[in-house]
Image (cartoon, rainbow, N blue to C red; front, side, top):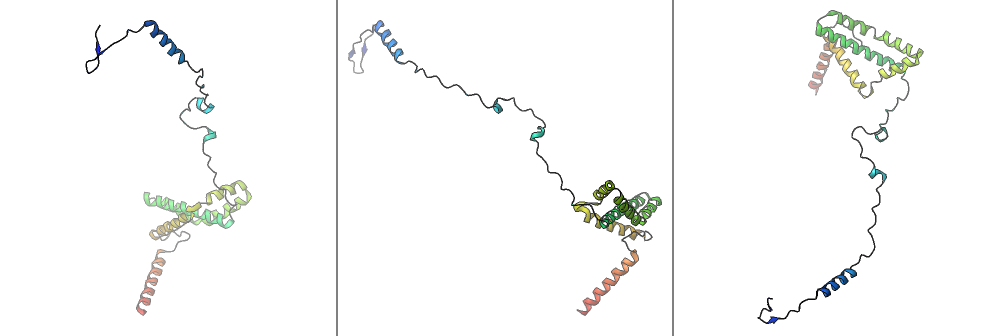
Length: 202
């Protein structure tokens, strides 16, 4: 058996260990390290939302869709004047479209249609107002058509400009709300003359 020595060379005596004593000490150490009998707490089951099956992709159910507020209803039925103006505006649009079609195709029939529609605008609007008085359903539909919303002013202006331009190229088309191009140029010349007089006096 080899001899153990310290770093300075002094022999170290080693007493052989008793196997029975080693087993006894080991058993005693194991007996002291008993579990305390406290088991870890059981995991609580998650809420129903966590345990439920994952949601399928796609459109959400109706209950989860955002609700869009309906458009505010109109304050009330239109007056006869409003209905008349609305119908006249619609007829002017129709006449303008007919004029454009005639210019694009070169067919006089479309030009004749434009004259016919524009000339009958007063009669059409008056008849539409009378029917609205007699038929409530027609009145509701007519009001919806005549209510152009925030674009009404723009549509009215553009229709007026387009109608005047159409008459400028065809003076014989007496579209309501337009003037003869010769009169238009005469008025413009008079205005320019007045400006020159004012400028010279200044």
